[in-house]
Length: 450
Image (cartoon, rainbow, N blue to C red; front, side, top):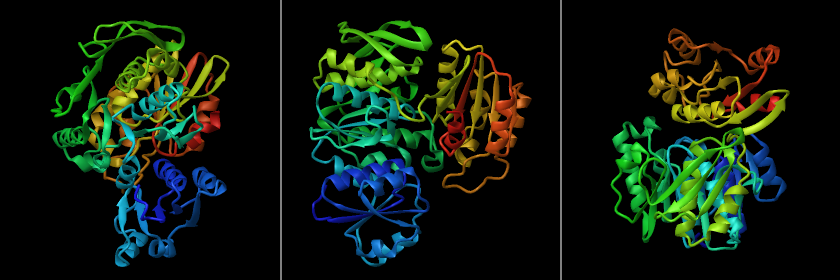
């Protein structure tokens, strides 16, 4: 990070990524100022830890007096403070550009893909911690191993999620780049899948020539990529450089497998979290660790010690024979994988409670959303969480519920969290897994059941 900036103003500092960046900048001796439209627990922690000087809403003094300004993807280009900074000649950087500056000079492991980024980032982090490498970690969720979304390490490694939205990940120069999967997503920005694939290819090309790009051999999207760097593949069903063989499902849907790079069986990996899809996340993490020269003992230990993240298949509570879970899944492919994970755990019934995230995603994947809940016995839909968007005519959770019913699905719609909570609590549940799904503010409903 350039030392010429002695102070930086972060607009939208309450976001999970921006708050992590604030802590990293502070640790590097930069005075950090921040604003957001509301205070949340993340902002309260930053203030309590004396990381930032905070202002609720607009902060013209910060915009004009700091050496640089950065902002989250949720901030509109016509934001008042951004316009003030421009008119005063203050350098402005996107979140991705600042992240790229932070990563500069470190051995950077970046994790990209449509799904699984946070889990894989967490698993790699756990491995490097087990290996005693003291990494710096930037992750899009609260990693329970460190009870935070960020860790400031003294080692040479920097581990970060690499988000494709608005081409954010193109600002990161990686030593090891991971592409878990590529499926149509963020079509409000990419327009079509071909543009999205091209963006992932450019991300791969930003990898150091002495480094490598780790990709999934079983993923249709990954197979369409043309990568001009050393490629290391991982997989289960297709022949790959790093494979999981002799898969076995244990109690609670937790898998184990033999880790086999280049046909050489290193030993048994036991996953601490359920779901077959987590084998792929673990394989990607293991492949990155192997490329980093980490021995198998530390790899196996790191995977076994992975504690998970908040909002990623987060266990809320057991209530008799019933389990309440919260998960961030909001893309139909993620929902399908998560509900398959629920089925894998052996419950008699699965009740899915879903808050769609953004109108454009709901529109673009309408048919897939109708089919995504096949593994749920009943689905409750809540109003679309708009995030950065305005409503789109004809696109609503009520319309989606009606479409699901026409396809024979047991689907219910509620206008409010209170109505949904009342309904769930009145049910005579038995041997049921209740899962709250979505990337919006559904967590506030989910935590009522914790």
